Length: 543
Image (tube, rainbow, N blue to C red):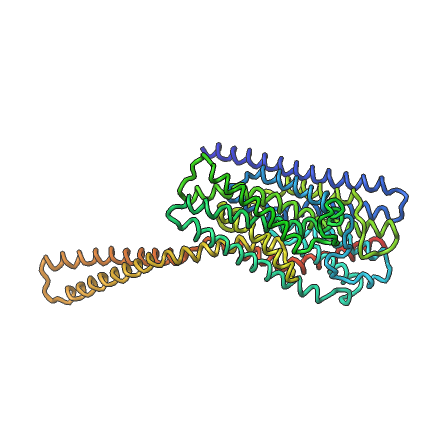
């Protein structure tokens, strides 16, 4: 029997090793292909070897974004069983790549969020190129490490730390815009707290309006169209503000009735959202009214109604993420490309198609090969999710970004999504403790009664043992009392244990909470330290 078990374990280990080698092989093949393509096509240009190596780093960074950051968009849908793992990966890969290629924009800021002053490089193009290469590689290495330990971290914060560390190594601490850095640090608190509160509020609203009702079918027919319409408004507004902002001038040229602005305004985005929300409300209301399929009058029956909206949310979040965050992978690469091609340093750089392709394809490959690990962590290893909870998290992801963008608050999409997961988990704990209050009261009464009986037996036993002359009946009673005393002691222990169990309702895994928060806090300094070391290594090898 033991030999068979060992053989099975060997087979599993061999199969796992083969899969790991395949993943590594595909990753290396992609990176080498990017390196060779770039080197061959940039022949004759000074510093083209730096551009080719930077392209390699960009490909590595893009794959790590796919492996780590994308999990936040599809993880809740997978954890709630609205999507299978393969379905989620397919949807995310298609929409991430589409968002990057269609709406990624023609120009990108060379220094993400203006965290360092490029004037401090004093026109030293080589130093700037080395700094951007160090930033790319350090951010990718940190993301790679975070993925291995199953900690979802912010890609934006990783690249921010990388740029800051390389900038300090190249030109000293004065190069950093510390005001911008303080805003980024503030987002460590703002993002998860806002995301958690909004997700918890939506989940509570769904419970109060549908789940807690006796006739859940009737309540669902009234409220589900409203919730889905709100989600439609939020996602269209979010997608317009964040996903289409880089290509908005092209959209205005096609749809001339739209306001001629360089970026979509909140009023424009919100108006488009309201129009779509009304259409969605009418469609969902009619569908539910004319549906011949019976809805089960239970929590599970209500959950099923949120499945399709969740699939749409995963697709739209992925598209917006691809359009907006692909710059984290290709921004420094575009900066290096611009510096090599022009021989100067610019605050903005054009994005060649090959650079955008590296970002888009790299994210899709990283997601397909290494994404499942983080998707499982986000979807099921922090708290248990169902469709209603996942729907609330998706709502928080879009609405938090909308609120923050209007208030000018810095937020991280990763922190919002994880904060939303913690929010619904802690709400479940709170509500269950409220519901358990009567049971806990009964447990306390039971414990007090058990203790009273125990004291009674102990008192009687003391009296019996004090008797100077004991008859046979007395000895039998003493023996019986010892037995009852032991039984009652066990009953008291069990009652105490049950009371502790009922009081200690935990749906959020505390170990996961500690690990993720720790990873968030050290992301910027860790990436900065790695980046500074890589910068000195590059400079040491070149000079």
